[in-house]
Length: 298
Length: 132
Image 1 (cartoon, one colour):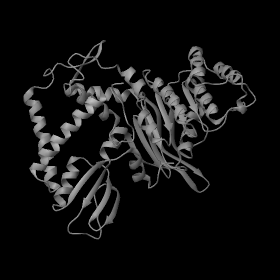
Image 2 (cartoon, each protein chain N blue to C red):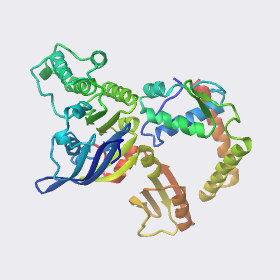
Image 3 (cartoon, helix red, strand yellow):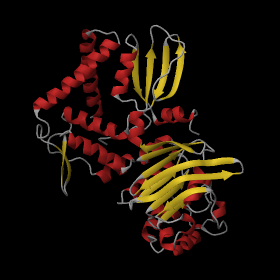
Image 4 (cartoon, chains in turn blue, cyan):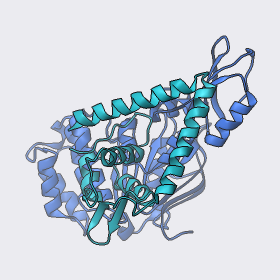
């Protein structure tokens, strides 16, 4: 076990009834990395994050956060984590300032000046009762409570859910500010792929409880490419190496998305189809995601 | 602002940064010895992971286009301080060869290649003027 590993997951299985929500997941998060967890609704993202936070018990496999089992993480290790979940705040009757004071009391590393700064930047109504907050205000409060103790590991479950562009940018700025401090790590799920592209250094794509991809963002962007082929003579079926998708566009025109599509792979294609016009395209993260999961990321 | 990034364009963000810095210095918008923004500044202003900026600067340094002076920051390198002219010409030939091969596969002539290069140059100059 490497000492730079903040999170380690081996062979993780979680069942709800007959359904395997997580079906043998291996995952590592190293110090300083920002891992973006992608997946359709129901892919198992929230369950995975909850297990890492010690809120759910795995059925099989081994999970370590700061080298410890998250279900009996010591107080010191717990303080190194900031977690923004999808659920609502626990003390809805409190005023915002009371809740901030309450959570501050739980952390020895709470940075009061930074918290005050965030209250202003995130435009939080200190005197309002927590239950009266709008969705956006509630998420912003959640972010403040998750980062003001300057955690070593920040875990965000769909932080942008239901937020407008301005608030999302505030979220983004706060997370990036955290990443600028040496050794801080972030693990987040999001359906807003342009935000993921800005923040993530690594990507994990989860589909039906399994990881389809896990690696550096640039590797995903540079090795998965779109290939358009105009074949002459026409063929009825086409099998291509490392294909995520192959579609016939009509006649001799085919469109494919290939993994590990480097220059050598393209040269091999040209050799295999000497008479064909072959065009290679860079794909957006959205297009890559669709190629892996077969659906838009929503 | 000098630099910008466009997520969802298909080009990795660090590559977008590299391209902009390369273009700017090719067009004289960045000169030898000019300082580049710090990693921290650029990461904050663009709203990107600092690792993305580090990656761009590292690749540019490897290509000899910028240099890092310890404790001072990153600067546009002296021309030739990085790659020797012969090496730069060699790289350009490699790119040109790829272009000719591509034209061949598209069923286009060498004439078309020359036209495409001329047009790209004009477009680049226009864009640089409008950036200023």
